[in-house]
Image 1 (cartoon, rainbow, N blue to C red):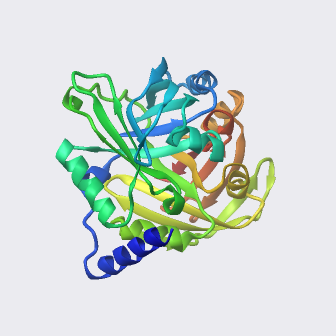
Image 2 (cartoon, helix red, strand yellow):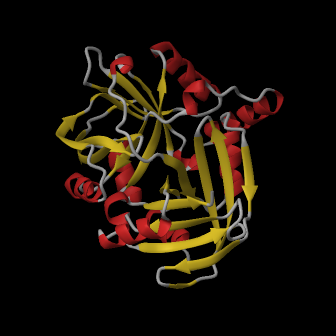
Length: 328
């Protein structure tokens, strides 16, 4: 613990004189690694919601697994596909002690990692070296079959302070990959935290320096089926087209506190932009994923006005879906 603390202190001092340059690979998310207790139930739920580009691969033995630098076993039931324009791999650990099984034991079902694609094997190693110089080591590395040369995936050990594991992947045949299906786009990845500034500072030290904190005046607040009076500070980070939202709940009851009580800090929701919020909420309600929280911001009927609704997908995702509508 002392060695890690010293490394981070040195990294912080270096950052003050020369902020780290963030590689372009972080301007987009290649895929999401999602750990689940039951792949079959998860896939059935997302398909019911209309996300049909999902296939179950069955039991998979991950190759060349090293967990905290030590050879490890990882056998899991795996499904893969898309939620909107984001590729997802759902992983149900079956055998072995590894990053996925340990995450499931601590948090239950939930999003484990946002994975970013390195353009080359050399770029992947350069980023691992950059993270190491900043005091952050590799949590797990593994090979993934599926091409003439296996892909290499690595998770950086960022979850303890950053609340999720940063993922990196090199895919040799990526130029031949099939594009995602047309449809709605994921516009936000959001997390719940208990100490907003420490999390933002941590990611800033790693190069995610574009950040802000807001305390927006919200109105028409509802929690489940009744009026509400919750409050939160919101932290924001952006690189490329990715919007990261960090939610620090100040007053409840609220779904943010509910989620942290059940799963701990970390990933809370993905957000989709919708054209008709009421229609979408009614559709999700009818499909068995009910409205659990919502509200509005801005002045009604004027630019800047918007509404949001959280739908309860915890049973299949260990997280929620946010539906976002903006006045145009």
